Image 1 (cartoon, rainbow, N blue to C red):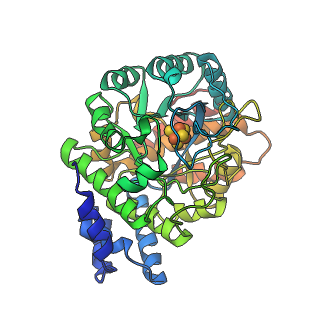
Image 2 (cartoon, protein in one colour):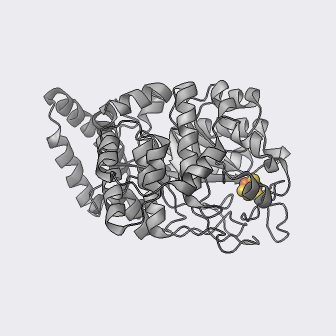
Length: 449
Ligand code: SF4
């Protein structure tokens, strides 16, 4: 076993709320690794004031590592035909009511092109598990999108597959490979995944080892909050992250916090182990404190209000304008994987982020310049990403504004860019960025450091 789930179970059951809370939080804010025992003691906290301190600490670490940036992306659902039967999912094989749809590579490229026109530069491809949507199909989709749409980086959320298939997909140009364990409790896992290849708990648990062996240096982890006791699940997610770091010197690139939402045709309509808003925000902060360089991702499963609170607790990436049905950006009416709570468009999300003092980032420069995996984590851990990426984030927002703004509705965003430019202490960088901003205004694209 890569990490001891029984020990994590005992730790969850016996951990008391951190008595030395200030000391543990100071350690995390100094970007020192927390022990699993310290993580468990933070997860045991229930006092409202202590929870507020944990959230504030999560936000400070996020600012230290990433600055004011909030990374934006959209999911692109490719297929809802699935041979698995996850009881919480609208795509499951047992949902006789579902309307299935698989995008051809050409259709996927058209959806990606539509999203690129709206301003997106990074997309997360999402697919269910079916023999027709394996590595051959995914490789064709990735190549079609890069050839035909102005999307700069594609990430992938897809079922486990062989190392050789993963290697092919990495070579086709994917960035992050994401697989959620759903639950780290083997018994709960067995009950909720009764049939199909996904019923194999161990196969799923080992997928990141295969992905790393296949050349992915950026991987994404997560559990589906609401299936099982959240303290155990969050602790196990951190333990999995520590395992990857200890064994491969890689932190997960992303830690996602999906909370179970109702899905059409799913027998599970309410979460078996509900996670309250304060618990959810505690987990967001906890991931930030335990794995400071990870992108903590909150999707449109959550409401606008909860997502704003999550940003204040240390989240650093959000999806925007999402559809969870294949073809949903240009068509209507196919079965979606779950109900979306935040229905704002990309533009609305950008305007709201700016109003709240965040810097919306559509940046993909690290992928274009090869700053991935260990290299990214080392720079982030040394606090270099905040300064480095800020200029790139400013540039991508400037490109977005140049392409989409003509009637003054982005005045606050333009003022923010000007203010951030003036605040750059390094004169050379400031002058160089000012020149690039003029180029962006004149129509230049894909400018980055
Ligand atoms: S969660 Fe994924 S694997 Fe399970 S039924 Fe849904 S699409 Fe298929």
